[in-house]
Image (cartoon, rainbow, N blue to C red; front, side, top):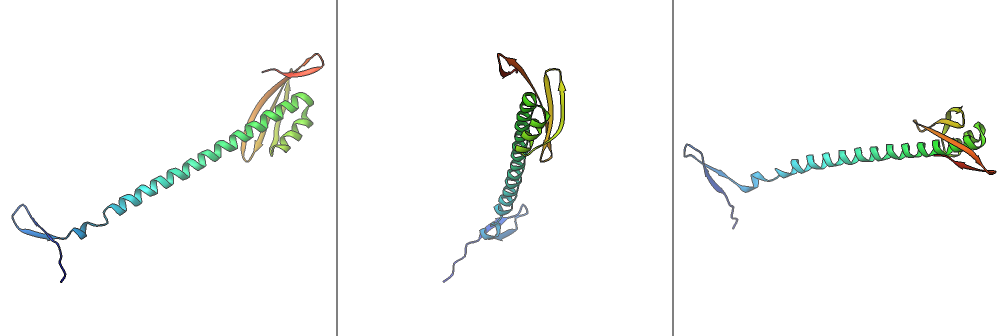
Length: 127
């Protein structure tokens, strides 16, 4: 014996409408699908932002090291340090006691400045 459950509804005019609870199934599925899509897109966006921040941090570190090398030992040292950091020296200039460099790494550019002052036979960085 098979038993089915049906609900009896009436319209404002008094006519009866029969409906089964199973006809309302699946309404949450599209909402969940859209929610998962939005969460997935946000996740992909966050990954891209984090990757860009990491590239920027690496190029800034390369620029800092390159500027220090240039201030201590000149342009050739700056070029060696930039290459060792996976970057390319695209700008180098000496301004009085300062060295200003610009490096490029994976499409990102950064500029750094360094100064070295002799101190009793030793050199020390000046902020």
